[in-house]
Length: 177
Image (cartoon, rainbow, N blue to C red):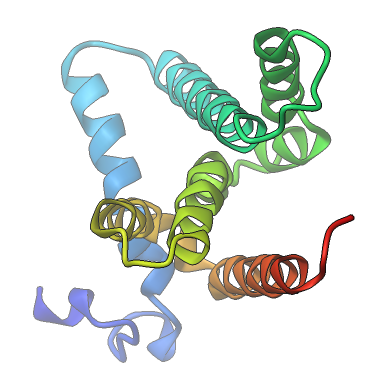
């Protein structure tokens, strides 16, 4: 048993990377619970995808409301535009491209990305450290950990946060007329 908790298992698949198997433990636990409740795998998968897409839309809606709250130049109905943006975000081609091959764990990061950007913004815009945003970011990254089985996802997420940080710092330094 103790060999299965390490990323490289020399007894299985000639030492191939076992990290992805560890990352699927929450997904397998979800399927196990629904199986014990008598749900079919199809129902469990549709429920999981619906939940992930709903959470992605909800997070994007909250993110749009957060960023549009400071903008007083908006003349259209803010709630309607945020709702439309959230619907478009939830059903973007990226989501469809991840559903077809079954990359559900990648969608966890996609669902959490708006809340990551929102809390990251509150950390870099404020002059003092916002402990609530720091704790939320830590918890979101911890919950997205199964999606990091593909190490490229965390690199892209860190690059996106770095680009956002640089753009915010650039905008803060430029005088606005």
